[in-house]
Every structure is written in structure tokens, then in C-alpha cells.
Length: 344
Length: 261
Image 1 (cartoon, rainbow over the protein chains, first blue to last red):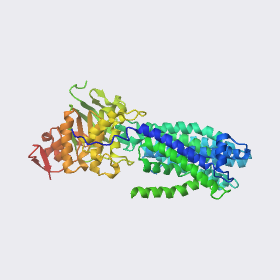
Image 2: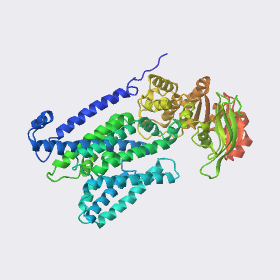
Image 3: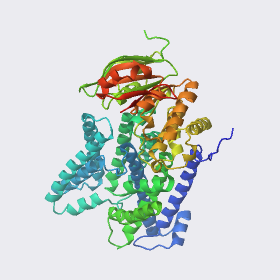
Image 4: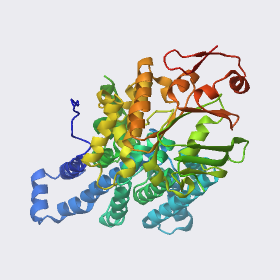
């Protein structure tokens, strides 16, 4: 029988593809990270950096700048970008909505309210609470997660709209409370606004050691739901017909994704735009198969945020621009350019 | 006890959405293997709801659905997915997958989340695309092909699921004339030869009459009449359900009734 052939590549070999993506992605991220060690207020020439990385150095100041200031910032940027992009991609999948981002289900608003309360208390009580802000933020995030989960259960609709509406409603409620706090604040206003726009400048190895496991474990768990997310894009009922318990899938991804995001934003504040746009860029580059798209988005997000943070540091140094502004200023035109190219 | 000769049996099935008015009331029928049953009835008579109850995604308020003596209520949706597949009316896909990737999704109930597809899954999907004349579409993006082409891709996906019972929701609605007959031929001959049982809802009575071994006429959620097209499509039944006074003629080639206004 004369069967026409279609290429026997791609789908079956996705594991080979994945390994390739992991290797190339890690090496590229590492390379970008090392190059970005060069940039900062104090200029250190690349030769010094290489010898410092390879042999250590006698110059205490340079070593301190590289290891305690710049390197943690780059690692935190990579982890944050990867987490935001992975969760953004997964949320777009479960909500079947390309406009979804990691913040749409309310967890960010909870974290923001928690952090703002912490900052306000600091000024009211006179205690220095700066190092406890992540705790406040995380508690706020968990509170919003709980409220969104409960309200999505009350709503009768058994589909993604219920979850989405609950997330939007809780976000509005918390944002309103934040606005009240901002209106009442005086000296603390600046800290609050800066937190809300996101900030990697307080990065250190301790913070990284706290968020690295939740990010890696959570993202892997999301990754292993990729096939289910693929099927869900056929529609709620179609996914059920393919044997996927869509209700459980949605709740699982909502909870895992929210915990990952809560952990990250508690330390970095709300860095916007990355989690919305990077999954789209990944889809434009490699197609919508979540098994490929999610790891690509993770690496792209990490690299994108490292680069944005460099710009935030050096553009008008020594003053820093909030990184959340940079991500949008760079990201929006880039995205429109890619869309145009794709449609040609 | 259920009858052993019957592949699918519905017993006193009632369904309503969240305690609203009953959409299906007291549905009883059974179906032997390798038969094509057409469900017809006016808009809102419960055709799609009946299909969703049979596919297991809607749980009946009362009554039971048996598939080869297994109560569907007691089966997990993973198990049901290996027995029943569905071609939906709405074939929109959120993200722009390639057509072949959509067909591969039919293998979902069999695929390990860690290993991914095997060569066998790949072969089965390709066979399904060949059968449904959708192989030439395999590299096309699903959002960029026509409604009729998407229906053929979705049929390939449903066949790749290797079900025993295939449910079609107004499958032929977007198909061109030539594909309508080709797909019906495929369904009637090839698939029934492979012992597949098919239930399809139809909007088009004439097509239903040609395609189906038996017809089930629904009216306000109740079975008005079930039988061969000749038994079901008569003036009295149509007047009762469709409130119309059509003319019935005999199809010269297929020797089944055809309805004209």
C-alpha cells in the first residue's frame, strides 16, 4: 500500500528535544550571567572577573562586589524570570486565556498587601522589619490563595471562569486595601511603591537558598502536567473525554503555581510583564506544545530578567530604575515586533 | 439485569441542570454492537445533553448507563476515555497546535506523562489520519484550517483514541457535500466492519435517514419514537415534534424516506 509519509521527527523525540533544550538553555543562561557580572556602577574589567571566577583573588573589594552583590542578583533574576514565565504559561493553559499572567489569580495582590502592611507597621511601631517583609508578603499571598480557592468553590460554574472571576475579585479587593494604605502613608510611601514595582537589589545568597527549591520543584511539577494542559486547549469537555480530570488539574496547577509565585514575589516584589509575555514569545518560537514551550519559557524568562536588571542598574546609574518598568519598556516593543514578523 | 446482547443500555435516565426543568426524562433504550444510531429532534429537545450523558461527562440525576454490562457511573473518566470517544460540535482550539498534534492527543488515555508517545501511538494516529483523509493537513495549524477540515482532524483524533463507542455531535454540519458522503461511507462501512458502535446527533433529517441504521426521535427530552428511518420519519411523528407539515418522498438510491418542505 502506498502510504504518504509524514516526517517521523518532533513529537516522538520530545525527550531528546527536552534534553537539548536543558543543556543549551543552562549554558546560555550561565554565559549571559557571567557576561552580566561585568556591568555595574564600579567597572571591573572582564580579565579580572575571569581570574576571580577561576582562582579567587586577592582584591577583597572586587571579590565582594562580584560574589556578594552582582552574582546573587543575577541568580535571583534568573530564578524569578524562570518562575514567572513557567507559572504564566501554565496559568494561560488552565484558564485557556492568552491574557492570563501569574498575578491574575490573586496571589500577587495578597503578597503586596502583606508587604505594605509590614512596611506600614515598621513606621508605626518603630521596629526595623525590613528583613521580615518576605514573611508578611508570604502570609498575605497564602491568605489570598485560600480566599480565591474558597470563592471559586462557591461559584457554581465548574469551569475555569469561576477560578478566574474569583482571582480577579480578590485582586480588586486587596488592591483597594493597598490603595487605602498608600493614601494614609507618608514617609513609607516610597518603600511601598518600590516594592510594588519589583526590586532585585536586595538579593543575597540566603534568599536564593530559600526560593531555589520551591521554584525548581514547583516548576517541574507544572512541567509534568504539560500533556494535560495540551489536551485542555481542546476545551473543557474534550479534555474530560480524553480522561483528564480537569477540575483537579486546574486546582493542582493553581495551588502549585501560586505557591511558587508567592515564594518568589515575597522576596522580589511584583515584577510585571515577564510572566505574561515570555510564554507568548516561547509559543511563537517553538509552538504551543507545553512540554517544549514551558522549559523554553523558563530559560527565556530567566535570561530576559537578567538583562532587564542590568539595564535597571546601569541606565541612569547610580540611581536604579525599577525593574518592573524596564521589563515592560523592553518587552512590549519586542513582543509586537515578534508578532508582526510571525504574521508576515 | 442488563441484556447480554446489548452493547449500550440506558435505563430510566433523567437529567436536569442544577435542579432546573428536566432536559431528559425517562430515557430507555439499548443498542447492539456495530450499529449506527442517529439522534434527531428539534432544537432544545435534548440531543446534545443525551450525548453528554452517554459519554459520561454529565451524571444522570436518576437512572443508569451500561456499557457492556459496566455501569458508567462506577467507571473512572480515565477508563471511560479508553471506551468512548467524542467528536464535538465545537472544534475551536485555544492554542495554535499543528493538526497532527491534535490527532496525537487522542492517545492521551494511553500515554504515560513521563515517557510520552511510543512509536505505536504514532502509527495509530497516522492510520486515523489516513482513514479520515486528513493526513495532508497534518503540518497545518489547527486555527488556520476550515471548519470542515477541523472536523476531519477531530474525527481522526477520536479514532486514534481507539474507542468501542464513537459519539458524534452534528459531525457533518461543516462538511462539504463530497466529504459528507465520504465520511458517512467511512463510518458505515469501514468502522462498522471493525465492530465500532456509533451514535450521532443530526440536524439534517435527510442525512440522518441515509446514514443511520436506526433513528431516535427526541421531543422535549422524551423519546417520541425509535426505529428504522422508515418507522420514524413519517408525517405523524414529524407533525408532533417539529410542528411542521413536510412532504415525504423515497430516496431513489438508498430507499429511505427524505423530508422536503
